[in-house]
Length: 197
Image 1 (tube, helix red, strand yellow):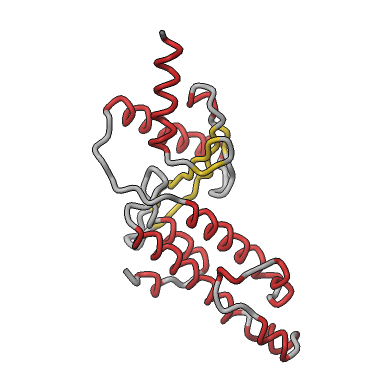
Image 2 (image 1 turned 60 degrees about the horizontal axis):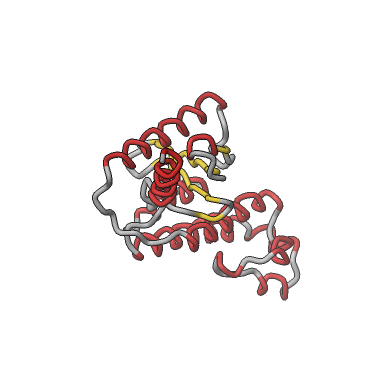
């Protein structure tokens, strides 16, 4: 799965990494999670290469040796070692890496029809909201009313895979904690059932 070698920009790496995540915001296997992290790290390596001239011209020899080799080593103190044009990309890669680390590995299972129908409605609504508001892929959208009052927010990402197909991949958060959509939908369904009684 080394398709990330074809990536020409940091955004290409981000898109490829996001394509490793399932529709419900989980990884189907530990290998997919590991691959996504490797792709993000390859994006960081590209930044390191593009930062070479800045480091030669502006940093001391000790600072050059202090530049982290891997994305997981990045801390706030390291940003001074990179040209400012790379700061936003480094922050995006580091934030995605933290999200990917928190995403659970859930093997795909047959879905309950009622939950699947509601899940499809939520995904469709999120895509419609993104189109209506022309939101950037990283903007969070509050969707509490779709989940029966549960404090759910969504971070949608526009992803283009290696076949040049663009689609929306969403990360769902319940009370600020990353949670697979299937778990949120099951909880919302349970609450709705209890309220109906």
